Length: 391
Image (cartoon, rainbow, N blue to C red; front, side):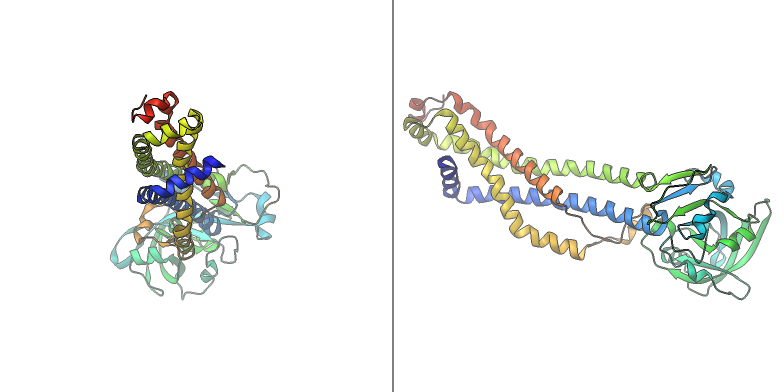
């Protein structure tokens, strides 16, 4: 307790030198928590959006479907297995059919992905019910707002759709945009044209066929066995999680630089303190303070910089992080071109494990940095210290 009180008084007497070190350390601590919270929030939101609008709790893929092989798309469909019919009828699963096509908006050619969905489905959070309309002889379709902006389309627009059916025969029909939906999931928006699943099956002559089956996110019962490949939500979001891991690895470099700059200030302070306080250390040793207690005293002084930094960061950083968590951070519209699910407003996630883990890392790093220059005091002689020399 005496050592603790003495270390505290020495830090307070150091004045501006102590508070400059504390402020730099608090900035490093706050920056690490903020950046890690941003990465965690981005990953959590992206997975939640994907689960809600596209992936559900998992998907069944037909044997020929490979999202990484565009050449396989013309054959990426198969008859829906009978074992899934009871789940589809119960609303716990919905079929989706992906098919290639070409549209001609404003006399331009644009390759698109025809995405057939059941208008009555409730598995994916998209307004598929808008497709259940009469469109005066046209094929009713739905577009995402990004897709609509890219081709300058508005509701009611009519243009030509061309496709090749399951028998290899080319066909074309006029389509009408009956709804433009707003979604945060750019991967099911850009380049996609939504049709009624039954209608798409009819015009492609692929009755009762689909590309994938999406499980409801609330479904938790036993999964039926089938020749179709089951992809869990964990497997479907692997690319996203891998990207976040790479981003965090890059962010670790920034964390290291920030901590190195803050710890360098503490290290220099310790070296300067030892040099300027030679007479004080000699007097303390002459009064009975052992070398080990002297080392503990100076190490504790350096370590308390980290404690004060955490307190200071809490005082001015907690309100800032709270406002950021409530209001979020608006992302530029360019994130739509990344080809991955990224929210337009990013809300960071600050967990207790993140905060306390960072606190522990900062305190340990500061303590070790404070101890390094103090080690040579183990050979310090009181007589040398009283003369202003270092042994």
